[in-house]
Image 1 (cartoon, rainbow, N blue to C red):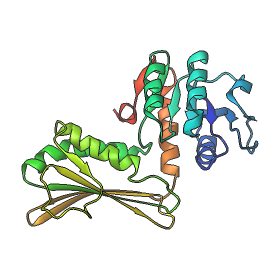
Image 2 (cartoon, helix red, strand yellow):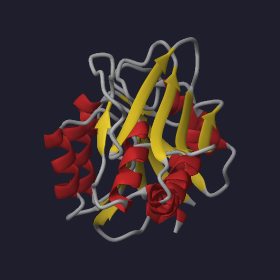
Image 3 (spheres, rainbow, N blue to C red):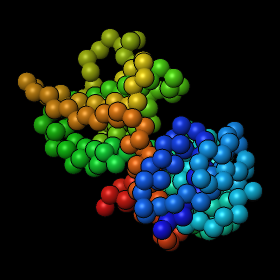
Image 4 (tube, rainbow, N blue to C red):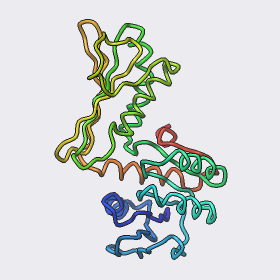
Length: 251
């Protein structure tokens, strides 16, 4: 049984992960940590990591960027691998992730969905062939009206998967309203829609002469991210120090 500390236990994703773990006979949440929540399940919930004394094999983090330094310090000091699902990290925090991975196993991905990470692999394979055939590349992402950033980190990650496979030949454009010119060949347009309760839709469009190929991913609930996080925890438990991603989980 893999013992898990759930960091950000009382947030929306924390509760989803707790529910998924309760139905998984390979993992057990031994403690939760949340500065703003209260115990709601059959494991203790602490206000800070300093209060947590339970032994664990892995941490699943779905908290806030402001808690990142404390989380990584705790993981390194206790030698507990960490699955970091929190988004919106600063460059300094991303650098700290890399530094911490020299001491303990750390897994971080822009999106915890297994489907999105498989899609990134497919795009990296398809892009060079389609680009060579003259296809233009556009990305459209849609999210709920409460999302504060645009475009989504996942949209950027999908674009990066394409661009990495193309040796960085493309630039990204987010707004064409001030331009009066034909579309440059070496650009990827990334558009963001916000409305309603859309959990997360991503379409990667390859538009060629007389044909269009679209790679799509639809998240119908946040559970897809929770399932990915739990699978990542199973993978990371017992791993040596190093930096891992969801692509390692899928390998």
